[in-house]
Image (cartoon, rainbow, N blue to C red; front, side, top):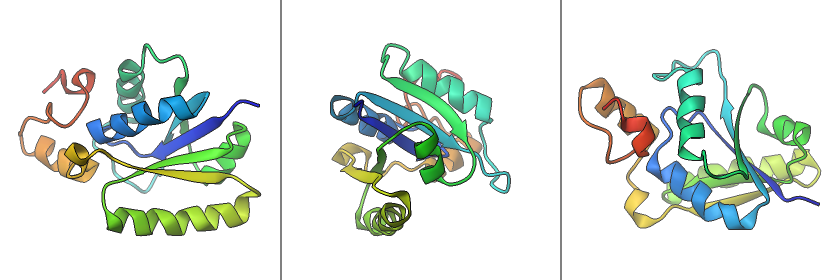
Length: 154
């Protein structure tokens, strides 16, 4: 049986921290689906199409990585794609406590889908999509914090 993981998020934008988590998880799974959650009530800076294109360009040489959009519960998306794992990255203890609560609830309602939590490498611990959006919105370069292919318009 293939080991399939879903890495969910809004990825607005996809940061070097996100990339770090995916790259480190590649040896653990046969396939990683980067799942961009669509929430009609959430205002995003980058369009869904742009985020999909950006992430696909980052992993263009990684055949085991795909990018898909979804709405609704991550658990339902996992079931639709026969994924047995949810991949999450954390920067600090606040992230961990938040992710732990969600992981425990998902485990309870999913009939066995496990959440794998990876701590980001230290150099990425201060990077958040919220901060990157604020920098970008205010005209500051973001190329240090996002993969090159995303920052080409920087």
